[in-house]
Length: 358
Image 1: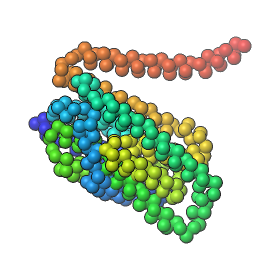
Image 2: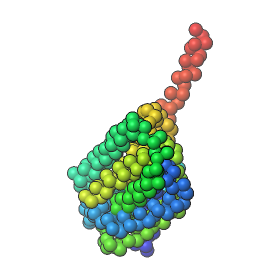
Image 3: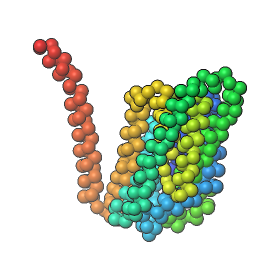
Image 4: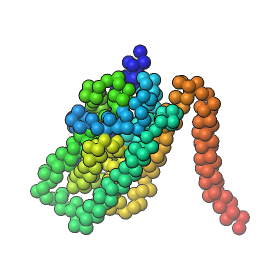
């Protein structure tokens, strides 16, 4: 029964991975107008994700399955806790339409379990986390430099009346498909890796099933997220879309070859923000959707870590005291943030009263 539950959660997680990855891949093609039909964009994404997972997802599966914590830690119960923690974080993000990195929430869940058992490969973890920071920065700088050059030579205007527009349309769709392919390579491991690490399924069959459910999620659940990445951050042309998708796909594919789970959504969104900054200036950072995404990116790995750690302590070790400490810490954090917000809100009204008395 527990094994069946592990597979059900893993496949549900895979569907949410597809929903989140949709924005990170074909969102650019949709936002630039290369693909005007949102459902068609999601269908192309589903095909790309499936092929990427089947043809190149093996190395990252090894990392998630045995590269962060020892294999002997991954029992059926632990696998369920890891997948449930990551799924909850990702599902919340998908509901509110925020493109979230499945790699971050999965690694956070695995690390939470490792901390509970004091068994984490710290050196490997530091390498992974460092690439979470480095790769989006590289994506941002690359896209920003190219965006500035495109603005300087006024390529956007030339593109509209150019005979090359059909070719650019094809190219942005092709790079979007390539990005979906890279998403499959990197992200299917997040759902299947724990199952493979625990010996519940072999890698080849696990990748095949995982790829199928990731593709289903991309097609049926990706509408809100593709709208966020494609329409709500900034407008971009066909040429800029090629830059964004090509940058993200190349970086994530390279990382996948070396077995590194990296945040595709952060990479793509960083490129989109860079293009917006190159065209409109850095005040684009003031947009609420960008601030909201940054907060979710930071909180989500910690959130999934805390959930998995707490579930291990409560369900497997019956350690209620550790759970009380975690809940108390969460309550204290929320309380402090609420007090800070209240203090900020009081300042303007105080200033007005002070002006009135003077």
